[in-house]
Length: 271
Ligand SMILES: Cc1cc2nc3c(=O)[nH]c(=O)nc-3n(C[C@H](O)[C@H](O)[C@H](O)COP(=O)(O)O)c2cc1C
Image 1 (cartoon, rainbow, N blue to C red):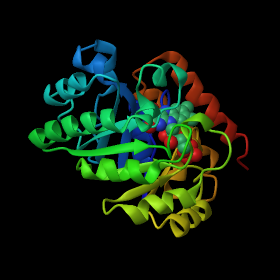
Image 2: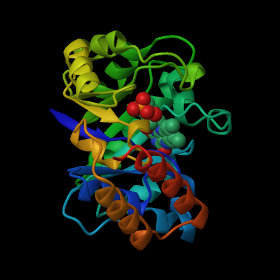
Image 3: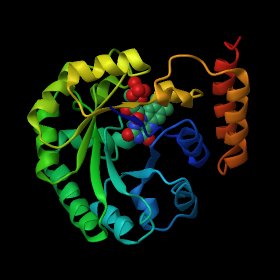
């Protein structure tokens, strides 16, 4: 079974991606990166896409509303060390959706086709894989026709978070809806939403028939969960991961505090 760590804005930074690998992850994802900022060479954004030195499969996730900026970013060479480019078609945040990015695309199939066709052409030229991460829809479930559209545009895999955009992170992820997507397309489908341990991962795979699962919130402060290892590591091990997180941290100091508080929550339960 494939177990992937999800892109998490403010969490899956450079240091955390390395910590995930130290915990056994075989693949890591950046958080969502603004294609337009990247196309303009914004220094802060370029720093966010620093690849980690460990020899694992690395995916960069782009979001935005300007097709030409996606193409410029992909063709610029700045992403060349990433094996796969993922297009964010699922972010529900108001500031993203109002700019016609993220899960807004699920309301406009024509625009999605334009974006993915252009990204597919650009990634063919660079020899990179292309994937999408979407939800079930914005305010109504369009996951099956949307996934078919993405597959027809030539994406290599589809990650589906089993909620609508309007639901944010409320309620329970609908794994049966993901199963319908899996049955409708021939490209690999990765199921996402409410997977946090071995039991939920196995249950999710059984319901969806997906090719793998992606874990998100469960990893915050608990990157060892990528092993689907149900027991809490000893305090020494958590302290070692916190040290690595601090040693490798290259971003905002407030993000490191956030990581430390999240680790500390688990540390409290040791012994
Ligand atoms: C704090 C936070 C940040 C997120 N950032 C991103 C992001 O950058 N890109 C993305 O595709 N999804 C993002 N998501 C959604 C997650 O990747 C995932 O789809 C969602 O949390 C459901 O999975 P889970 O139930 O395992 O957490 C974010 C979610 C949270 C809670």
